[in-house]
Structure formats: C-alpha cells, structure tokens
Image (cartoon, rainbow, N blue to C red; front, side):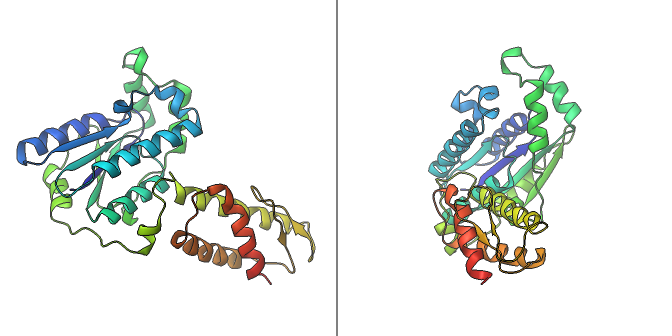
Length: 275
C-alpha cells in the first residue's frame, strides 16, 4: 500500500506526527503499518549529518528499506528529514514504479522553535547547534506544484493533523502508472536527480563566467570534468539552459550509476551541440 513521507526541520515534530498517524491507521484500518526512520538504524545523527558521505549512505539504506516494505497491503511511513528535493523525487519514482500512491506531511516550524525543542531534549539525543543551523540552511521546502511533493499536507506545531484527508490521499487516489523514466531510474543511487541538477548547473556557470575573459577557440575547464568545453563562439545563457534541459531529460531516461561521470557526459553533449 502507500507511502507517507514525513518532512521538516530537525526537531519539528515529525516523529510525534508519525506516531499519531500510526495510531490513527491502527484504529481505523486493518492494515499493517511499517515505520522506517533514522531511529531504527541506531545511528549517531550528529556524526551522520555532519558527513555528506555517511548521510548519503543513510539515505540509501532508508530508501532501500522503503522499497523492500512497499507492497499492495501495508502502509509505510518514512520518518526522516527528507529535506532534499532530489531525494523526494527518487522516492516518488520508487512508489510510481511500485504503482502505489504516496503523500507528504510537512511539519512546518521556525528555526527558533526547532532550536528550542532540540535544547529541551536529553543531551545524548540533541543535535549540535551548529549542525541544526546547517541542516536548516540546506533544507529544500516541499512545493505542492511538484508532483513528487503532492499531495502535500502542511501541519503547524499546534495544528491537528488532517487524518481523514491523509487517508483519502493514500486510499482513494489511483497510483500513477510507471513509465520509462521511473523504470530506468537507478533507485540504488541515492539523490541522483539532485546531483544531476547541481552538476549541470555548476558547468553552466563555469562556462558563463569563462566567456567573460575567453575568446572563440579557447578551451574551458569545468568542475568535475577531465574534458574541456571548446568555445567556437559566444553562447548566451538562454541557449546553455536549453541544452541543459535537453541533457537532463536524456540522462533521466538513460541514467548512470556513477554520478562522477555526469560532468564529462555533459561536456561531451555540449561540445556536440555547440558545433
């Protein structure tokens, strides 16, 4: 059955809302409820979220566990930060591939409230203040206009969660049919879309800045690529963005497991397109 994705700042009430949802569905349905989250992994969150590689590994483990538990009969609740839009997109692809609905519950708090709640916890389960601030800065808020963030239920700290509306969203909506892009998406590669978006944007900015001092025929180095862009003429940003959109569309249909290859692939694509 469906996936409910929790989302919010650290110490924003996600686990409390997860427990409320679990209790509601246990009382009103005969479905089995699986809660997947950081707490089940017994990780030290200050060590994990301060290290990008460890954080990627944890996200991959959580997603793999969601993929393993999502089925036609049970409800899965993912209780984690889920603060990266690319990661939420991958979860959307996962549920689309499994042909089951999903929804997002966004626990909306201010940084001050989250900080106060964090300080009120026992010392051994607190985030450090520096890490909490860093995670807040990195947080990418969900947007209901994005299909992977919809349907979106935003709940403030004193609100009552819309249990019936959440139930309707996961029980009465048809699951989106799978398509080639979701079937091809490498679900084992955490945060693929986010990396694709960031790397290609960095390449564009490098080219744009290099053109201020280069002349036609120059070779331009870009971040993460061993190959260079050959600038046969000046290219405006609108044209570069067009090529970027085309490349992203193609790469989503033919993804690579190793994101380190994306820069070189994009350079090769641009050099062919700019000929």
